[in-house]
Amino acid sequence: MIDVREYIDTDGGSPLASWFNRLNPQAAAKVTTAVTRLAGGNFSNVKGVGYGIFECKIDFGPGYRVYFGKEGERLVILLGGGTKKRQQQDISAAAANWRDYKRRKEK
Image 1 (cartoon, helix red, strand yellow):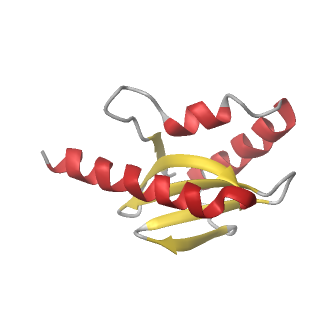
Image 2 (image 1 turned 90 degrees about the vertical axis):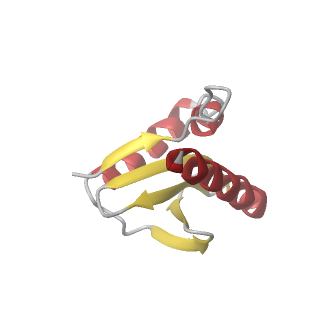
């Protein structure tokens, strides 16, 4: 099993939760299924997008995505979510979150 955790920013918030809580129930169920598959080690719909960030594509609605970083082989940090339309902005935000996570982890 993979340990899947949400990134928490310096204000105590989760960018993933903020995005997820705005989804309709069907989309939320699809995202939950995708995250559950990640936890089970299924990375079949995942690709690297640069900056040490990975994208899990969800083929539903506007093309939902979940962005995450990996700490070794057993820890996934969920950094945010979005859609195909906002992909570049979402990747940039996830990369900033990943840099912040790694910086704070070192301290």
